[in-house]
Image (cartoon, rainbow, N blue to C red; front, side):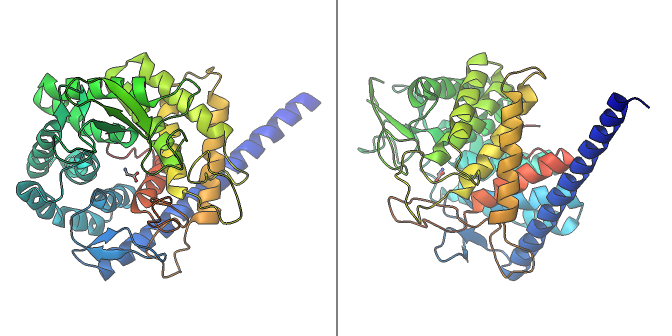
Length: 397
Ligand code: GLY
């Protein structure tokens, strides 16, 4: 056999070996995650995890923006394992989510999308439950109630006319839009699509900066729609780039592209991804803001890296084989997921309730600066099951 051919065979074998090792690694990470999730479901029946300090979750009711993530994890676990335990646990929460909508409990914010995409829509996508579909459509209708025609966007926080937040959008909202795109597909009513599309265009114009960085929030005059200024809520300072916001943008614009095929959204997602990847620290898991001065103990945000990994997985579906970004996006995805699973993930034998250590919620506001974040757990699991089994989460069919 000639030398070149021997080399090609050896190289091929090495690649196969590496692929096998990688698959075993992701499988082990998923099994660890499912073990922790099962313990949580059994240990806190009927309860939902809240953001808590001290590396633990507090367990309670359905009154924040985050409760859907826990239910979404149950659906991912069910799809991955086929174990009906997770399905039954997830289904048992639907009346609770319906009741929250009916009574309008803490829903004066746009995160209705996060809450109901991962609970009611996930249930409908997985089981075709008509009951879940009806709850999801009710939620989409409520989200539409936050459309402000004067501003031409969805108001992020507070009631209409709120003096601080009446004219404010935030980049996180991009992940709330799939609920509206889904509602349009289900009902044929264009209003849902138009609101989502116009909001995404507004976000692109005002939240994404020329160098591929992003504002967390932007203010408009709510009655005239006149653009006022960019700013931040959870980032380091007004002009800085909050890493989780950047990650919401990567994933959110890629999803907006999936639904609309507007090439500007794909381009935005790629630019945000490049900015994110070019600034990864040595262990490939980001600090909480790209502009924060680094010193010993500067908090990370593992949840931002988990969200970005899901965004990269989505982006990679849309890039051609010869796309110049493909190689660096694939590499960054693997490096980040490897680091998350080896340096940040809890082992299944520990008593941990969270999957990922070192997430941060609101460092500047000193709220949970270095703790478990349930959305970090959700996106970490979403990325793992997508890489391992092609299960894609609940943002689209
Ligand atoms: N969407 C709120 C946050 O990312 O903290």
